[in-house]
Structure formats: structure tokens, C-alpha cells
Amino acid sequence: MNASDNLIVLAVGEIFLKRGNRRRFFAQLRKNAARAVRDLELDVSEIHGRLVVHHREARLDDPAAENPPIPIEAALRRLQWVFGVHSAMPGCQVPSDLRAIEEIAAEYLARRIGSKPLRFRVDTRRPNKSFPMRSVDVNREVGIAMFDRFPNLVLDLHEPELTLHIELGQALSFIYRRRHPMGGGLPVGSSGKVLLLLSGGLDSPVAGYLAQKRGCQVEALYFHSFPYISDHAKEKVKELAALLARGQGAIRLNVAPFTAIQEAIRDKAPNRQYVLLYRRFMLRIAEALAERVEALALVTGEAISQVASQTLQNMRCIEAVTRLPIIRPLVTYDKLEVVDLSRRLEMFEISTRPHDDCCSLFVARHPETKGRVEFLEQIEEGLDVEGLVADALDRIEVFEFR
Image (cartoon, rainbow, N blue to C red; front, side):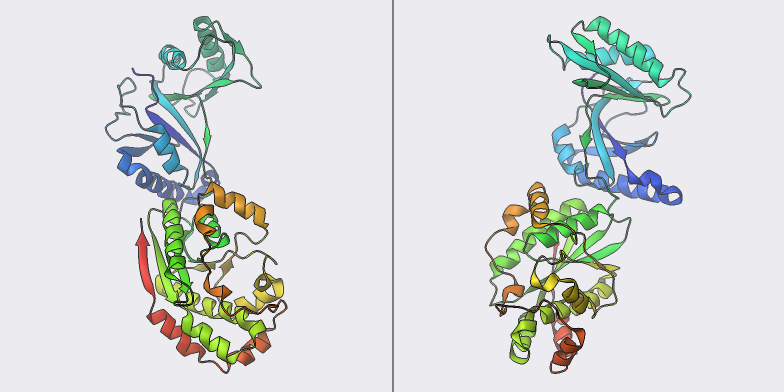
């Protein structure tokens, strides 16, 4: 048997806490993982409580089969966006027999260690309780065999430089040497659908990622004020939406025209209230669109007191126009935390391109920080609220990214 890395074992996290719904979450995760690696000619199977990524032509029913190697690094990059996976372990399959494990483990390690002293340990997991030896006994026996084969190995149970991991199944077991942390969370699609208010800034795309991490399927809504805001800003948002598609396979972006609403507010309202009125109209449009696309909640990139419109008083004024739950994944984040996450998600360079969004239009030098719902409602009596919202909804453009 070939002892090269020809599969990836996936460990799940929170799914095991779901009890009666565990199978549904697990099935969703398997579907999402298979979709992520399908074009790499890989498939995903369930084996003794784990998901295993392997070549489409691999034979996992035969522990001694010579299965083809797989593109490990490319697969790991894809799996990083498969939420619900806690860690990924590239390795190979072995028969569930102690001597076979020792032989293949020796071949596996021979490819990866040199002649210098190396701190080493064996770590065995035994989901198959019918295996005739306890995990600690397997650790001892395999460890002794490896020390006999490789005199440069030094036992270190606490801070090893190399760990040989063994997972014992009924007919099929796995060995691997490293764990890669993955995104964690819950499988996208397991928590329902949400509508993300997506701008071209740093916060909202990161908020969309965090909503996906909690199992939400995301659809996006962007407000565009042409000709005051150039189409370069819209293209930037399209690129951010395409990045979010990595977490769920495909995403729809709705682009709503916002120019007429902003001009009406400019002509009828005090300029200190502009941004609060903009946001109230955005939530009205978002609520109507959410009903149309069957989204259960709205998601925004707001954080407490990050900008004038995001004081607690102002957030209360804004959300008063909708009955839908508003999820704010970044509500307690500071800006540096958002920047760090944006960089890690490869969004930062796109988000920081110098193109304005619609909320920068006609803004007062000293905008309102302590809005009052009653005052905003009084101003809106002079606006054709229903007509403006209906017109924006009728003229939405829809884009899809895969």
C-alpha cells in the first residue's frame, strides 16, 4: 500500500452538540464539503463519525487499495470555507490491524523525518471500541516499533515536534501527522437564510462571513446612488460578494437604486438627520426584499458607536421601521479586529479601494448622534415613503456569483 497522503479526515465541532438534529447538520456539512472540492476530482464519504475527503476513484472499502494521491493544499484552501469543519488532517488509510499499522506508519514516517533527533509521540483515537487493544496500548506498541526503526526519535508526550495520529475504525483506520485548524461554526444552510446589507466597506462583508459561520445562507443587498456614486463602487461590491460565495457555493447580490430616495431626503429633511433617514429607508427596502426571497433576518456590519449612526440611540431609531430580527455579528468588535479579519479573508484590499458609498452623500459635518423616533417619523410624513420604497424594489438588479 502507498503511504502517501491520499485523503483528508475532517473533524467536526459543534454538530455533535445537536443531538436530535445531528444527522441533518452532518448531511448538510457533507453536501457543502463535496461541493467545495468537486472540481478537484474529489469526493466526501462518512466513515465512523468522520467525513473523509478522497479521490473520486478511491476504494475506501479495501484498506489495502492503492488509492491515488490528492491535491492536499488546494483541497485545504477550499475546505477553509466549509463551515462546520473544526480541523482537517491529511493522511492515508490503513487496515485495522496492529502489524499493518506499524508497517505503513514506518513507511509514512520515513518520507518525513531526517537524521536529526526529533521529539515524537503517538496519539491514538479508538471510535471502534471492538478493536482488541486500548488506545494507550496501541500508542505503546506503535511507539516501540517506530523507535526501533528510527533511532533518532526521542519520546516527548508534552511538546513533540512530530505526532503520529492513529484513528481506529472497524475495517479501515487512518494515520496522519498534522491538524489544520478550519473555520469551525455550523454548516451553511443549517440555520436558514438571511439578507446581508452589503456595502463596499470593511465591516459588512466580514459580517456576512460571520453569519455564514453560524450556518446562515447569505443573500446580499447593496444600495447604489448613480451618478453621485460611480459604478466602480458597484464593481467593488460585486467582488466582495464573489468572495462570500466561497462559503456557500453561490450568492445572489441585489443592487437597489437609492438616488431618488436620497434626493427626496435632501430636499425635505434637516441635514443632521440624513444618515438616519437613509438607514431607515434601507431597512424598509431590505425587509420587503427579505420577504420576497424568504430570508428570516437581516445582517448588518454595525458596531456600537463606531460611527455617528451606530450609537445605541440611533440604532434604536433605525431598527424601529422593521419587525425582522437584525443580526449584528460585529456589534462589540473594534476596528482593528475587523481589519485583521478582513485581511485574513482577503477582503481588505478590495474594501479599502477609494470609492465612496451612498451613505457618504449629502452628509452633515455634525450628524445626529441621539436620534428620536418621533422626530424622524414627523419628517417622513413629508416624504412619499411607500412610493419611494416600491420604486426602489421594482428597479432592483440581481447578480449571481459562484
